[in-house]
Image (cartoon, rainbow, N blue to C red; front, side, top):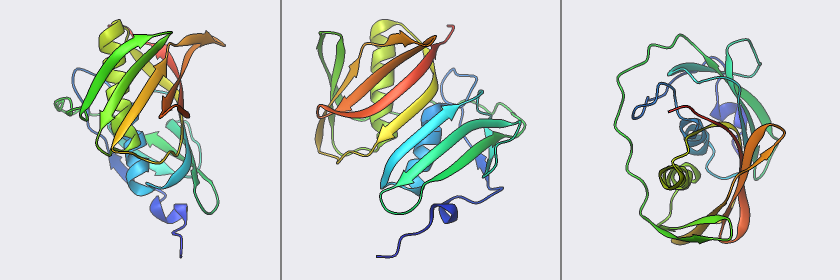
Amino acid sequence: MNEVPLTRLFTEGEQLAFPRVGQRRYVRGLDVAALVERRCPDFARLGLKFLRPIANRAVISFKRGPATAVAVSLTPRHGASVDLYVANLEDALPRAESEPALAAHVALPGGAGYHRYLVLGRHGHSEILAVVFNRYQAATGRRFLLRTLHLERRPAATIELVSLKDPRTERGLTACSITRQGRPWCRIEMIDAEG
């Protein structure tokens, strides 16, 4: 089978237009994860490091520069890894779109430092994370901004048990891990957001 090189899925200088969702004054980190997932749905690992708020207008680059908002490290299931960057262009702060509907899910009773959800139907990584982030923030009243996000590929199922372990502070950042079907899947570092 011929694999498409990752550098063909992303083009130097390609301009991106991200939506502004809900009451946020910034682009969601999950929208960057969704972009990568659409281009390379079968990745083995994905790492995102958020360096500054993402402008709604951005550009892809294979070199890090002063306007870089997100450093992306992508490893396909087959072939070589690639590092690329999402760099901000001017931020016009477009009109906000409504919050997207969450994937069908059921919040399960928490316990032993976990928040658990059953996600129904097959969904992409960013859709499952949207459920976890939304429900966790609603249940705890805590709002956070992503600093890093690391995903491992996991086989999808029509019903998935997703668990977020209560965050803890490490190296000045709040970190937590998320499992799918009891297997490690996602690790995030975050910063508490105001309001």
